[in-house]
Length: 159
Image (cartoon, rainbow, N blue to C red; front, side, top):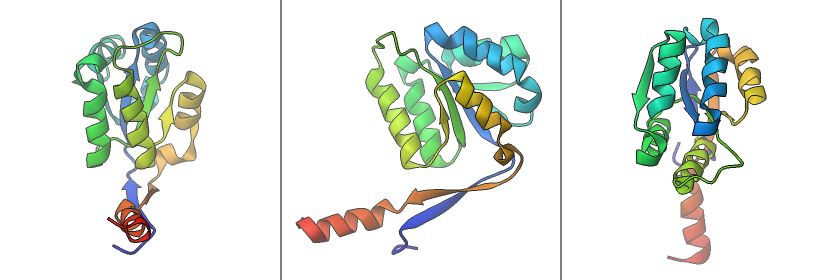
């Protein structure tokens, strides 16, 4: 495994879905979750601060709430990805509004790519994810073996 190019992680049939939205997109995400609650009720949901609370109130779905994004919620979800406790992310961010925690947003999106986590940044992509055949079956994520990559870089460029 140490010398393999990739490491595989299984996404189980029951998904762990993170739901995040900037202020200008919260209403859209809450309405999307309400329209899709018959699917979402079969999965574990989490989200940042107000977004999680609003979705739970509107839909009746249980949503594990982390801090709000500016107070570390994005980083908490990133940590759950690293731990293997988030399988995909629906993050409706507002492209027209600068956010004080933009570096945290970028870090969350980066860690999702590193760990081969599907990310929906708009409703169309979120709909496609929910309609995917993989929603009802297991899926093996393919993650680059960064230990091997770093070892090769050190050997190539020296320490």
